[in-house]
Image (cartoon, rainbow, N blue to C red; front, top):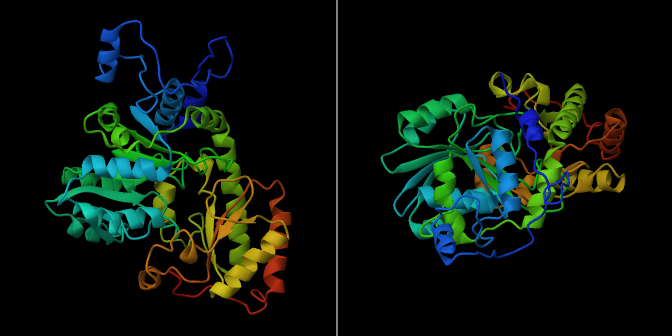
Length: 410
């Protein structure tokens, strides 16, 4: 696939007002005008390059948005104060009372709660389906369906969506395909594969330093402008504005994204291969026995690998908690939610990031209580890390009991 997004992002140049190699940060909530007429035109969205109020836009947010549009290969991009701010803006821009959404069954817990619980207040319903089963997706679409929503690589089970096929299906039904690409920036070019709208939690890999919360919507110019409309734009009226200082910080961190993603993927692939050799129940898209391996390989950008996320099932919550606590004690990472940090982060999603999903539904999905989600860090000596992780598992009897890969894992 001819996809050079990282190089395109690096080609963008913004000089500071005094010639700095970094663009100046717009540290203002409001902007002055020489003409009252220009203020009116700007408020109506008719004046390019003028700023009124930072909830509408700011130079710092604009620079970051342009870089994200280059990253995903879209016409435009808007930035928000969180990933959920971006997701909720998209959904409420596209859906009205009585409308319907088709969504992947495995999805971030916050998105699940928004779709399953909160949107009931507005009489917006959601059908959760196996996104890898195109027949099930097609059957779930009805005349009131306003979008198909999925994650390129799902949280936390790492199911891989066939974006090209989902795009064809969505277009045939005249509805947009919305893809959350938080787990796989650069590895998967969702827009180039046919996604109409791509959302990100910038908090994760794109920022990469776990020091802020932010989100983005990458889409057509018309859709991004509609989100900022002062009369009925969900992005504008919900007020989920990203602070200019944070936007500037994220833009700087994006410059190393291509290097970081390669290392995250390299380390995750190494650990997944070793864990398989140890007979552990590991799930990683880079493993040939992963049901989405072929799909991901067909649509990914090979130089960036299969991503930095893997899961390990140790059978019981008590063992999962003991393992995470011991790994943190041994300084192998942090028992923490989120991902994309330079250190490895691990959590039990059933009791954290997916806890919004009822236990019975978790069990139906195959989300075991003993599942540990790893966001693999940028360790320089990954062999040393593996040896230490293996030692923790031996100490807890996880390897000694030969927790073998079951025949029906998938």
